[in-house]
Image (cartoon, rainbow over all chains, first blue to last red; front, side):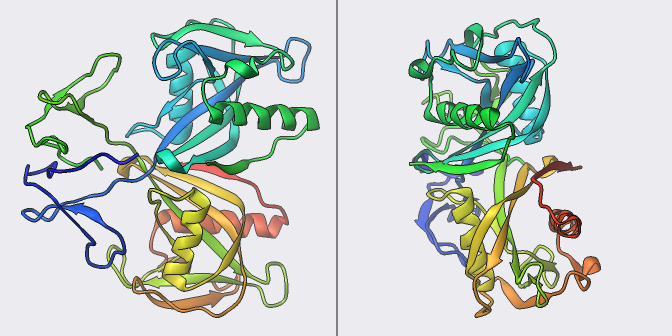
Length: 184
Length: 184
């Protein structure tokens, strides 16, 4: 969750662990240049990409992972938010990189905290614009699956499972909420 | 936005800037231990705390900042999300720390990207549970203000202004959405 910080990133001096002024918790502080090396939770952004939502050809796009962790298991397109992009742009970028899929974002759908590992997983609902898909290097193959055929036992991560569970429940209700919850 | 990383945080060796395997952008990579020092956007979490929402005594809680940047200007309670907490817990913690206010969260309200500085500002709607407030060290004073008396010209940050604009608009409509947008 938190790297074992021993040296200042800026000047290379061994750091001290102490509570900085005006703060209430230990940080890695450089005794030479004063730099405080904050470590905060990071965002994973992704989409639940759907073709023909609510129609006769309705399909959800899943990707089989080509990398560890959980190589060989199914996920929705998602990855770490990068500097220089918004959460929506990052979710669309991951969808293009991992599945070769172009989407129109339809709104924030879920923000799921995994407190133990210091991550927030943020999913957008997304409409697939076409079916010209091509898996990227992190993906073995894409799958377009009906709502009743989701491979629940072969999903890569609990956040993916939870995101899909929430999506399926809202889809059956005929209205989509915005969900926040924690996985512990 | 991004610190000038020159040394490995783990082993103190001078880093190289290069594109790691399976990636597509420059990172600070340690040639000795292999550590990759990722830098990603960070989350600021806060609340829009309201007393007697929709009632005759309706008031919004603002805090006058006691610290730079924008010392002396008004904000809603908000601060950096910390390891070990969910986004909702972090928003409630900041509300207690900065205003001494206990709230019940009422749902995610806005996620506003400030791409240029690598931050995502996440606001929750919140119901003030009582009016026993006490400003923390980062706050000069609290203000309970009616919807028509928000000090628009003395707000500390554009995200705070935008969050309050969205809240006021939704409040007048009588229904609250969930908003995602970027400030450029």
